[in-house]
Image 1 (cartoon, rainbow, N blue to C red):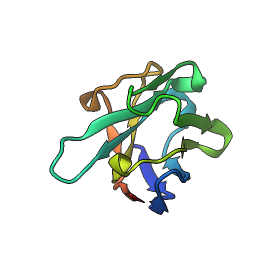
Image 2 (image 1 turned 90 degrees about the horizontal axis):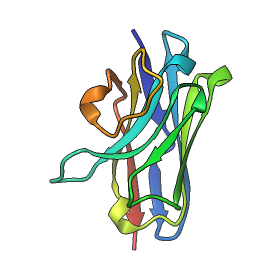
Image 3 (image 1 turned 60 degrees about the horizontal axis):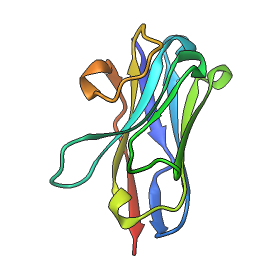
Image 4 (image 1 turned 180 degrees about the horizontal axis):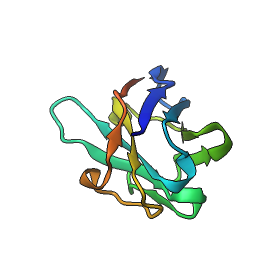
Length: 125
C-alpha cells in the first residue's frame, strides 16, 4: 500500500505562484510514476502533469505547459508541482496520484492506483 498526502494549496492572486507537495509513504517512491490531476467545481477531473519513475519522463497538459513544472525527490519520497503564472482557470482541487509498479507516465486517471485527499488551489483575478 502507498499513502499519498498533498499540501501547499492556498489562495493566490492571478500571476502568482504556488508549490504543491505530495508526500508518499508505504513503499519506495522511485518505482512509481506519479501524476497530478485537478478538478474544478462542476467539471471532470483532468490531467495536469506526470513524472516517470526515476524522473525518466515528464508529461504536461497543454493548458499548463510552460507554467507548471513537476519534479521529484526520491530521497524524500516527495513529488512537487511548481505552478507559476497562475490564472483563475487554474482554480481547482489538486490531487496527487501514484501509479503502482509502473515507471511510465500516463494522462489517464484510471491508470493510477493510489490517490491523495486533494488540496485546494484558488486563484483570484
